[in-house]
Structures are given as C-alpha cells and as structure tokens.
Length: 421
Image (cartoon, rainbow, N blue to C red; front, side, top):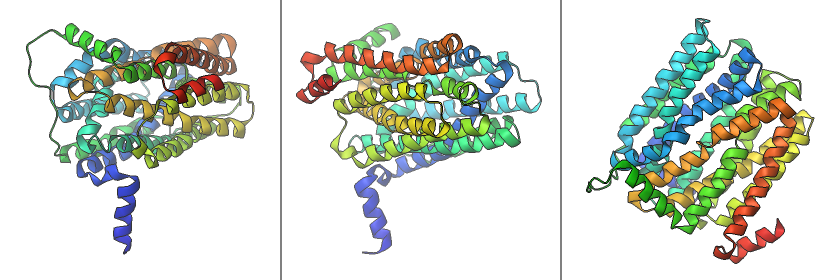
C-alpha cells in the first residue's frame, strides 16, 4: 500500500468528515479565519484592561458583546430555518471582517476609546447572533449526518489549534507592535473563509413554505419541541451551567495574570494557549472516538472535572501549575461542548435544527453576559481567585440539581456518576 492510499485510509478511518469536498472547503477556511479571531479576542481583552484597569469594565465588554445573542437568538433560529445557510454565512463573515478593520483603524489612528470598543462589540454580537447557530446548522449540510460528530470534533480541533496559535502570535504582536495588528490580521483572515464558502456546492436544506403562523408561534413551537425531547432538554440545561460559570476565561485569565501572577502580555498569551492546547487534545480525542456517538455520561463527567479544576486554578499561585490546570480544563471543556453540540443536532429533525441550535447558542454564548458580569463583579469585589473558586463550586452544585431532576429519566450509567459525585 503506497503512502497516498495510507493517508486516505487514515483520513477515512479517523477524520472521515474530511472525505467530503464541501466540508474540506469550509474547514480549511475556518483554519485560517479562527487564528485571526483568537488574535482579536486576546487583543481586545488586553486593550480594554490597559485602557481602564478595571475587571468589571472588561466583563462589561463581554456582556455587551454577547447580550444580542441572549436577546435575539430565538428569533435568529426562525430566520435560519427559512433561508439558505450559505448565503447567511457570506453576509455575516463580511460584516465581521469590516468590524475588525474598523477596530484596527481606530487603534492605528490612536482614536480608540472604551466607548468605541463597546459599540463595535455590540454590533459584532448582533452579527454573531445569526452567524453562530447558522455555522453550527450548516455543518450537517456539508458533512452529512453520519459524519456530523466527526465534523464537529474537527471544527473544535481547528478552533482550539487557533486558540493556541492566535494568542501566542497575538501576544507577541501586542508586545512588539501593538494591539492594532491583531485586529488587522483578523480582518484579513476572513478572506479565507469567504473564499471557502464560495467554493461550496451543497444542496441547502430550507424548510418548505408553510402557512404563516408568526415568528413568536414558531419560536414557541421550537421550545415545545426541545422540552418534549429528554436528550435535547437535558443537554440545554447542562450547557447553560457551563455557559454561565465555566467559559469566562476572557475576563478571568487577564486579571489573574496581572493581579495574582504579577506578569504581562506574554504570560497572558501563554496561559490562553495552554487552554487551547488542552482543548485541541480533547477535540482530537473526541474525533477519534466519534463513531461511537455522543453520550450524556460524557457531558456529566466533563462538568464535574471542569468544576474541580476551576476551584484548583483559583487556589494556585504558580505560573506553570496554572498553565497545567488550564490545559486539562481545556480537554474537558471541549469534550463537553462537542458532545452537547452533536447530541442536539443528531436528535433534532431537519425542520427544527435551526431553532434548536439557536437555543444552544442562547445558553452557550448568550449566557456569557451573565457569566461575564458575575466573573467581573466577583473579581472586583473579592478577587479573581475567589471568582474561579465560586464558579467551580456553583457549577458543581447546579449539576447535581439537574442530574437529580432527570434521575428517573436517565440511564443506569448516569446514576452511577451521580453516586460518585
């Protein structure tokens, strides 16, 4: 067997979603674009902290950016189910590119102000309200249902490889050239994903035109559909817990770097990259095991471990121990999110998938304003270490409550996990 055939066989057995040409175009575009996204994420967080010196105001930026997702996600789901997802994504990616260029221009011309960052963050949040659930719903169209979990895991691997490269490169750019270059490179990176989308020749799934029932009735219909499905409902509740208490790193890590470790940009970038390394390992692990399908027990175990690690991070005072703790946290963060995403998509009918994923975006990203405000306020009043510890403790407590509620509806394996907790 020659090396070319061996490579094809390896891809088919382990990363089988890449055998789909449309998915390869989509995935390769994301490989480039997401590096720029992470460069902008750490650049924006550090810029806000440098301008204001306030963890609370840093948390407020995250709150404003994710507030539109909280408010409008359910409405976005109705739109996504009615229009071709490829066209929606082309629009949202172009808007994101223009916003990145605008932010870089403000920094380069030294006219940047905290208020401008707030405004741009809000516009980006409105754009992401449609973009995020559309991207998630589009995956099944370019990879197929059979290879969906593998495709989601590969997307997660890309996201977290970018989380390693983006913060590392972004931190160096900030240290030597300034934050404006992070935003400029992010704007340029969108060219790759826009090109990839233009090459995709997928048959879109658009719901058959039905009698007009009104947007609110369609939203309610989608919520009833989720409530009536045990796997969907439990996944949504568990994702809410993680969204509020476990994904506030953009607020907590820069403050922890400055106020606890007493270090600067390079350390911040390294810690964010450590989180990304762990997440990449977790994504690759899920990808290799994706043929087994998503399991509820994996989500429950992941929340238990992440909660304990958040508490451990709050108790650390050493640079390398913090990096190790964040890396392991990343492994189980991505195991949770990939499993939850796959569970929701696989268990959703085509005509409801856009609305189901809009609810997922609502509780995953739309809960971020609550989480950011909680983290920012707690870090301001009690210190960032206390914010880590409280986040882990509350997440673990809420997990136990959710599992107890579903106790009579879950499997024997899940009951064993509850007993271990």
